[in-house]
Image (cartoon, rainbow, N blue to C red; front, side):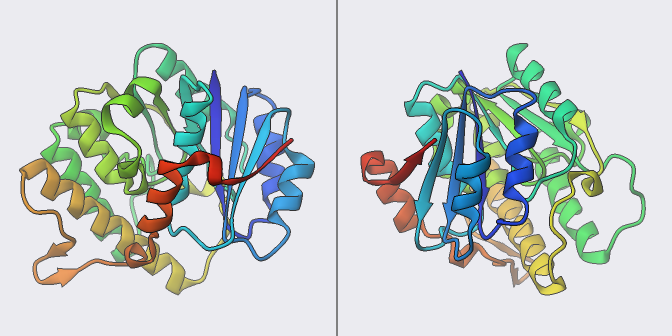
Length: 269
């Protein structure tokens, strides 16, 4: 069974297009995790979702990436062999990318990634800093030559049921840590597609939000590096703590959801 997990927070203006786009490759199960929405995201998802769409509603925001872990566990319990992650604002024409990720999983890859920085040579200073940490993590993992700066923290990616059984679900809320744990557990990790970030057509956010997301990714990479080195996990580097949105991750809500999926407020289309 192929499932797609779509985290969505106030994506009423784009979630319909995202859900319409996935109909081309026809997932067996669609899981929309409505993450503290205060707009009509849920109604739009119900209206646009293909057959067997399940909308999980959290009244309180879970925080960045945490919905992936909830959605993956939900899909796993329903028998998913492959889980694809797409953000709720990722409305670009990316069907070809998803098909390449699915082919990768079918061929034996456990973590199929997309390189979202394949051609750009000049970037903002903070973006370069973030890519430096992604590059360092992949180097520490012995995967730099095969992955470059690709990471599950950016763009769509797909995972196998084997990966979920080996790494669990909690680390999916910190994607670079997911990568590090997957490598430690002997999972097969490859890049199967490349698409410049602009073609994902993600929503343009305020500069402050972009900065905090970038700092979150840097801190997540530091956690992955610390794990790989066998060091105490933290987000400190050269005296700077890269928190970003990390402190807003609701580990309590995640733990409660993973303990008892039956308590989730779910609408099935």
